[in-house]
Amino acid sequence: MHKFQWLAPAQPVVVLIACNIGAPTQSIFDQGVTAYGFFPSAPEASLPSILNHFKAMGEHGDFVLFQNSIPWQDFVAGIDGESQTRTDVRNQMILARLNKLEAVWVVDPLNGLNRREFMGLPAGWQPSFANPDVRAAFTNYTLWLVREFRPRYLGLASEINTYADAHPEDFPNYLQLYKQVYALVKAQSPTTQVFVTFQWDDLNNMFATANEGRARLATNWDQVEAFEPQLDLWAISSYPFFVFRTGAEIPADYYARLLTRTTKPLAVAEGGYPSRQTGAITAKPQDQIDYLNAIHNQIGERLTFWVYLLLNDFNIEAYNNFMRQQGVSTNDLGTLGMFANVGLREMNGTPKPALEIWHSFRRTRR
Image (tube, rainbow, N blue to C red):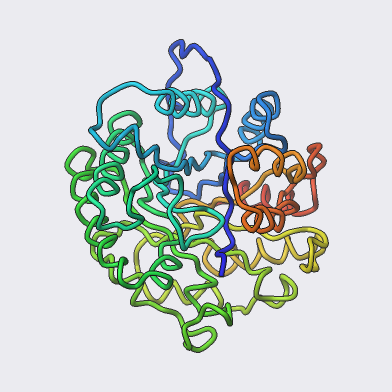
C-alpha cells in the first residue's frame, strides 16, 4: 500500500547573489517556543510561483522544511565537489533567508509517495540500506548538509516505520546506518538535533491493509524506541483524513499518548487535512480547524516545531504534467492528488478559516 506522503517536485535553478544574506539575528529556535513552518511546495510548478510562495511562507511561518531526495550519484564518491544539485540546494537556502525563514532539513532516501521504495537510485544499484553505495551517498550528502548549513534540526529519513513494515529484513541495515551517521553528525556539529520521522497513523495501525495483524490504536512503540538513545526529539507525520471521516472524530488522546511515552521534545514534521471533497475523501473547512486544534490541544506545549504540509493548495493538473516528465508513476500521481486541497489558503492565496487558527497559535505560542 502507498504511504500517503508529499513529494515536492524538483525545483528550477534560481540564480541569486547571496550578498551578505545570513540567518536571522535571533533564531526562533533559540526562543524556547514552538516554531511554525511549511514545505516549500508552491501552487504551480514554475519559478514565479516558487518565488511568490517563499515570500508568503515568510509572512505565515517561521521556517521551511527542506526534504530533498538524495542526489545519489553526486555524493557516492565523497563529500567535496560541485554539482547542479549542490547549487540548487544552496539557492533554496538563499530564498529562505531572503524571506527571513529558517530551515529544518530532512535527508530523504525514499519515494515520498510510496515509502516502500527508494527514490531515484541510479540504474543497477541494489535498493537496500546494505548497499555500500547507498550508505556512502547517504552519509556524504548528510555531512555535506551539516558542513554547509549547520542545521539546528536534521532528520535522517521520513516516515521510516512504513519502510520498516514493508522491508523488515532491511530495516536493521537502516538502523545501523542511522546510528553511524548520527555519531558523525554530532562530531561535526554537536548542537544539531538529529531525528527521524514516524508516520503516526501507520505507527498506530490505523490502516487495515498495512497493520500486519496488529490492533487498531495499538502504537508500535518498539519501532521508535529502537533508535534510542540516538534520538534527540520524537517527530511524527499525521494525515488523519485517511482514517477518520472528520477532524472531529480524532480521539482526544490520539496524539497525547506521546506525552507519557517520552520526556524528549516533540515535533510534527508534516501533516495536514483537506478542506473540501478530494476524490473519495469527504472534508470541509471545519475539519482543518479540528485537526489543528487536536494537535495543539493534545501536544502543543511540547512541540519544538510544527510543519503544516502546504500553505496553499496546488494546481494538480500542472503538477501532474510536470511530474510525468520526471517519470513519476500513475499510481504515485493518484496519491499526490489526495493532497491538492490540504493548503491553509486557496491556490490564489485566499485564506481558509484554518489559517486564522494557525496564526492564533503563533500569537500565543509557548
